[in-house]
Length: 401
Image (cartoon, rainbow, N blue to C red; front, side):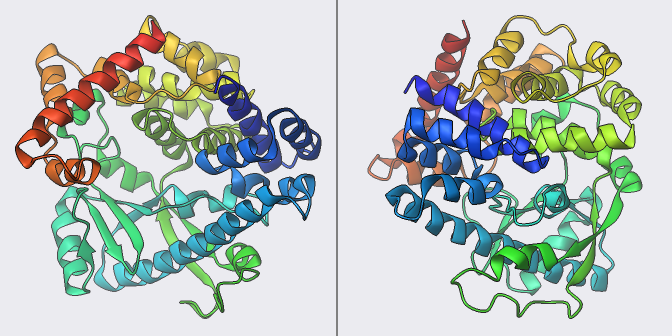
């Protein structure tokens, strides 16, 4: 198991190089397969969501007779189908929002499709939608009237024929854990005022999805295959992509690759000064640094010196600095995102409330715990949640000590 962190970093670097069009993939993948074996490489690229970035060179390296290739090919087909279904759902929803006069921002997934060269696929599991708090109730009523059913165990999740919608009224995740809002000052109305429209073309999606064995995927909404969707401003996109990775405890390295590509986009548009200004105004210096600094170290992402001194390297001391070092080495750090968010919340009273919300969230905690512990008595579920939460935090701190 000690080899996995090193392999994760190497595969993330290869994936980043592939996304940037650098011809380093075949040699690097050949070395990884030779050193770690095809099965372990396959497990890591699936777990970290990297397969869509490096499928073509990995297929050539493994060879047609590889057993590992057959498993990866099946997963690749599922990725293509899932991306197409998410694209189709985005087209359908945008038409619905336009008809009802609703302003909705599509975050991550479809908004980042343009970062990838043709033939690549992002590992997408849901659609993240940002809505104004004043219109959230109206949106929920609209979904009910169109017979979308609420997912039973996570707040804000709605399903439609297996596709998942994750509805947010706050980019910091205060929908699920209300006290997260004390970690920053981010007015949602500003994000909407600066938002932009991009063309959601089906051409890139169908280039891969149309070649799968899932039947005719080209019968989709929109005759011209093109829809305009509202997305975050490029600077806000970078900032909250970094926060999102921290929030999820650096879980998947595909998000690190996304961050590297978003940094390159900001570098091309020369908007780093806006990044510095907004991070300071949002009061997000520490969380942003903890999200971006591992990408700078691990994936050799270019960041201008003035940004490095102003934002990327604030007073990262103690657990934050050790977190950056551990993530940059490929370690998995469950629960560490909660610790870093707690560190950024103002006031010990609010930090205490944050901890209580983690142990007893306002959404269907018993439903989640009942899924994890189906044979345990219901009266023991709160104790199990407390024990699970505390043990996870202790393990995370222990690994960083």
